[in-house]
Image 1 (cartoon, rainbow, N blue to C red):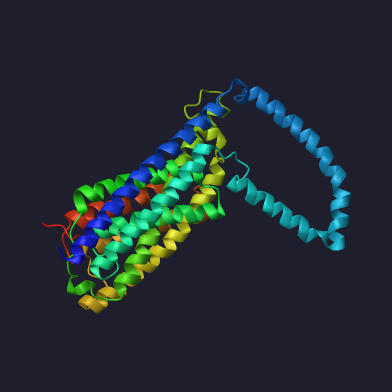
Image 2: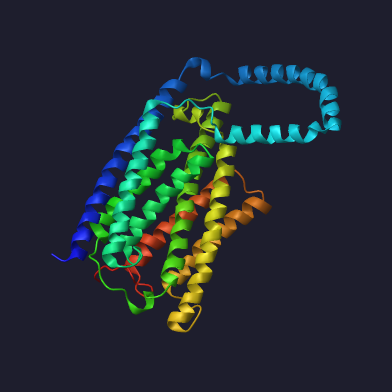
Length: 358
């Protein structure tokens, strides 16, 4: 058996192992959410609307006295050079409130994170072996793009947790990754084949890799927006003193925090996608002698860009906050998945590089 086929088969074995580990991690993340629900569901934690208003009034009265007592010392500290320190303290407190680093970390959550890291390691090996077998970057067809794309999604999720505490998204992120990998292994697997002439360019590395990065950030923003919609529903139920279906949401950040995080992540994805659109036009000119040809893939790439541009513009200038911005983010990622799973496979054109037989 040729070395290329052997390495390709070993790569598949490693991707199966990664899928199994991701599935176990998914269960551990789900168990953590169940534990959060059990911890949050107590009568004392579901106060009535009257009790909440009374508590807010009491806090406001008590806080007014504290503010008046501290005004003199705050002014004196600012005059003495302590104003900058106070500002930094407030900003630090705001950031800490957003990332919720004070949450209790249960054993299931720690196990889930370590399993995710282990699965990611197996995934890296699988992707690297595929690249070695092919003698090029491993993202030239649907199978390779699925492998590398899901790898980057998990990598972005792990890296984001170094900055923010987003471990509560593990169920949503790994659920998406498991589904994509299962579909890829059943529908998209192809052996290593030579590249078409149009793909034999350094733009394959630049253009596709940036597109994969953009997709990964959009996936993380999709998960945040989905949780945000659930949190908005729970907050409305709590305000109206109605029963709440998802008790674990009480242990997660508020909907406003989730929305702000989703907005930041989607902006990064939008920047990557903008570069993808520009780089694709440059590559098209070098490969086919024109920057734009209304090919189906080009059109859908532009549609995705328009949706996310509208999301960012509407939220920044038109005041589209809350559920409306979250739904726009969900529509944008749905367009990304349609572009990947439908346009790449069923629409034939100059960008038909799925590697699948017609």
